[in-house]
Length: 260
Length: 66
Image 1 (cartoon, rainbow over the protein chains, first blue to last red):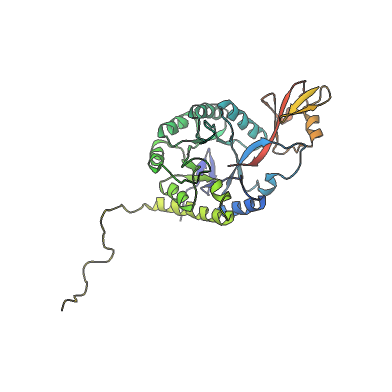
Image 2: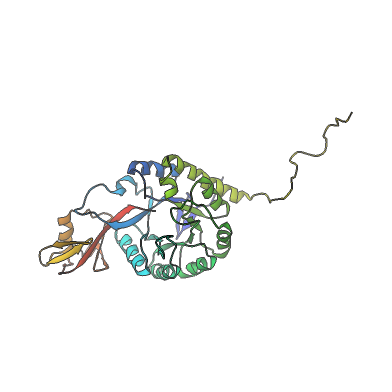
């Protein structure tokens, strides 16, 4: 079936699944999971090099000709830290896309929306394609769009929780509120969660732990690919309306008469 | 002089350039970025930036993350 591409800051992607590179039991499992996921964008964190240098790099297991690297600002608790991390990522040659995280609380990893807005403004002004990880608040989503975000990425549930899409109604309202693509980031636990996000009309889903922490990450990566595709198709197909009572699927006319 | 690299104290020769420090540490250049005293240093300035006593250097690369 014909489908449009996901467009993020002018870059086009046919896959609507974005996957992470963290928490895998081995780099080889990660590489296989990426392959099965069909993803074209993979997230990375920016961290200190272990010194003295050299040693195995995660980039030895990611074909950068094939995958677009999406650096994140995970671990940043202020706009200033997040902005500096984004600059580091760009200087490292990772391009100008950034998954912007400004964390407000270490227990829930919920975003600090004030810092997020500030960092979004700064980075958008400096030419970054800003992809902010935000909460499921439609008003904040609107403010982020106004601040120059290329997409908004509301959480389905806390990062790494696997609780699924806890507030589908808010996600729905966000979709009606902003014109930029909406990508559910965080909270997805299994394939049906990804399908629900896409059925709601989201433009994509970003996940890490749901795949990396599955018993078989490679199989789960395939499940997620299929779920995102199925959810997208269902969303485009337009579901039937819900009814309280049954409606027969077979014609009521022409039923044989068995009365004696 | 004494500088801090990725949180660890190091004694290095006076006026060491960033370029020389990275070479000494064996840091691969591709996909690496450096900040000195919180400011990101463009790769083109590695050779000209001289480190000073007390400087804090951060050397980063992409790692696994979500």
